[in-house]
Amino acid sequence: MNTIYLYNSVILLVATTIFGLEYISVQWSLNSMGPIWVIESSLLLSSLFSLPFFPWKEFNDWKVSFVAGALLEAMFMLQALSLKYTSINRSAFLISTAVLFIPMIERLIWKHKTTHMEYGFCCIGLLGIAIMCKPTVYELNLGDLAAFGAALCLAIYTLWIDQCILRVESTWSFSLAQLMVAAIIGLPTAFGVEVNIPTIQTPFLTLVNIVFIAIFCNLLACFLRIKSQKVLKPLTVGIIMLFESPLAVIFSWGIFNQKPALHEVTGATIIGLATLLSISTLSKRKKIENTALKLTKKGESLC
Image (cartoon, rainbow, N blue to C red):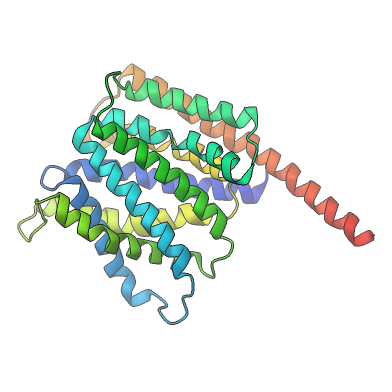
């Protein structure tokens, strides 16, 4: 297996694990704060932590960071909005459809062809999500439309990172900049949509969870995800990120003692299988592509 590919897959799995823990933190925080302010508070706190370390004079990637931050904020806000009008399970399943939007957009804009094997991994992963979440079938509501919007934003965000990550000077600075942009853009929405603004009377446990999301989810996990995309294809990133939902179930079992049902275990197993197969199989394809590229360059040099 390609060592570099495997290393970056592990990095993304670590980020996915942290994002899985984010579900638990958000679930705790929603007891005393609206979903939009949970997200906005964590982004503002991440930006505050970033200020002393950000290379203001040397940073030249504001344009690409602005687009990334705007997409990230749109995805966060639509995800939060979906939780207000639809169930968590239904929202999680609909947002997971981002893995299907990625190859569709790639084909539409860049004419990239997706193999049957890659589509197969997507479908296997979504099948696992469907079995695990058991989304009910009824007429679409505002929450469902918001979840679909979040899925589309997530797909576009993944593709945008893929297009610009090799051109930015510093991955860490780029990650910080997009978080600051997202925090600023989200303020009007937070004040306009939710009246439950956090105050000094906010429960201590909620504040602890906000700090956790800000440091580990926003600063660390977002950076690791962006870093992994220097090597991993966007579709591979989408497939691996599907493992976030099973991890959330596992953490709920360990922290809240919520024993998973049979359908959750079955769905999580299927998602895990799709993730491992995609990492193993697609890494072999990546190694073959890299070898072919080296041979091509060698042939050009001989000519």
